[in-house]
Length: 81
Image (cartoon, rainbow, N blue to C red):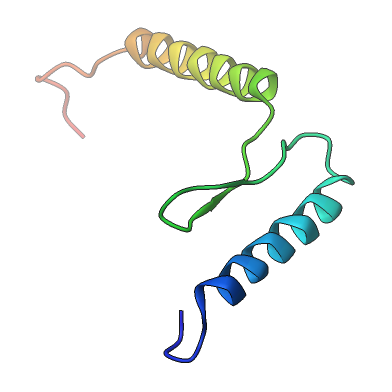
């Protein structure tokens, strides 16, 4: 907030920004309505179902990668290059 900005003007700007974000986000179904936190930060949450699916895919990829790394043949310490 600038020196000459009143709390009422700040509140009006926040409300206008949230309204514009809601309008813009109406075209993006993967995201929920923006949330204005007490500290002034704005959060735009991803749809919870998508978030869970992404996390599940990430965990599966990490598990497969770990299994493949464990299956790699280790070079013998006697191996000569």
